[in-house]
Amino acid sequence: MTTFAKPDVRPANPNFSSGPCTKRPGWTLEALADAPLGRSHRAKIGKARLERAIELTRDVLRVPADWRIGIVPASDTGAVEMALWSLLGERGVDMVAWNRSAPAG
Image (tube, rainbow, N blue to C red):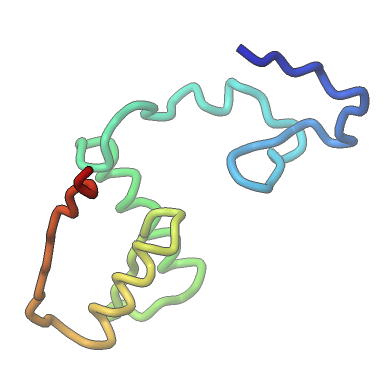
């Protein structure tokens, strides 16, 4: 097993969060006291939190009531899929799958 030495130089701002961003000034672990960690977005509390985020987004950005707001995963996949559905509409899907065996011999 390879072991790695600790770096000699530490970052100027050690407050790293997920992704290449830092936590807000004054952030503490207590900020997560009421967070539904480990719960699905399909759970009652998850749905309520998403609905509240959509309401606030609509209010802050003044999104018209007849427009839809979508919250997607942080990856591009969800956003691209949503854009394709929105731009192209519902379409049939062709799927192909195969299993390539290892070469003989």
